[in-house]
Length: 356
Ligand SMILES: *Cc1c(COP(=O)(O)O)cnc(C)c1O
Image 1 (cartoon, rainbow, N blue to C red):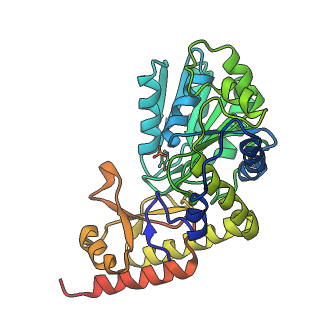
Image 2: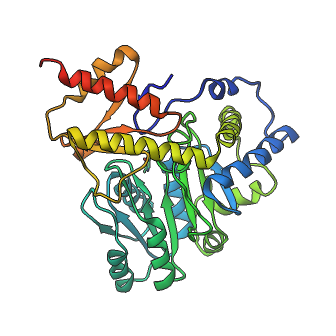
């Protein structure tokens, strides 16, 4: 039963939750190696990569940190089109990484033209971009941006935060030439929070070899060295891996293409509903397929709305940070289905028709 129309944590299927309820296994055992080996192909399919997908016991922000620690020797550019890119910038600065930022008005995408001027003005080891900006409901044109970076500055790495898109939207890490694509377990992948994944290219590993002080816990070279033996340097979050194993099988059973189409269909339902009643925050042509940010063009008290929805244990999300008074958000990711959204939208209509 779907309840959480918020962009993470999302609802987890009962059998995936139940998969956690297994006895512990030693992490230096054959059983654990088999588990890690079984998980790897499913993860690679999510990112459409033939390379490794590293697994970390952290939330996605941990891998934002890992990406900038491993892939930047001299200078990083962070493209900021919302709150999560702003966080990535802060993560880089907090790690002492010399970092510039390229800002665009929230609700608008980073364009190839903007990125071109930035790349002509300065040399960067890496460019960091958030694929799906969860705060504004906007999808950045990663493939176009990547093409530009490869043309203009072939040695610059592409670091992509796909926390709220991986598993809900096609991402072609190899074909698009992406070097690090990171995500969290608790969004489109519909797993409990606590795991993060990064598809890492050979180029990114080569770069990491030249970067001193990469740290230890998130060192890509160390993680990769163990992963090639189906192992992890530290004790893995075994219960979460059991859940991941079960969820990858469910994702496979649905089919990735069907999963992506389900997300796209839900996005268009919420978008058209919103446009009839409110307005959308993100620019047309760049709207997210996994979360919609809706402008409060009519008064709507999201706290009271959630009280109204709480009898069915349903929650939607208010605007994020500085957008709290201006927007609210409906996530349509993970286990949610069009029928769940139909029900939700009727309930919101009922709420809005109530006398104040
Ligand atoms: C949720 C989110 C994050 C933060 O992820 P955590 O797993 O909470 O660390 C980062 N980027 C985006 C785009 C997000 O939606």
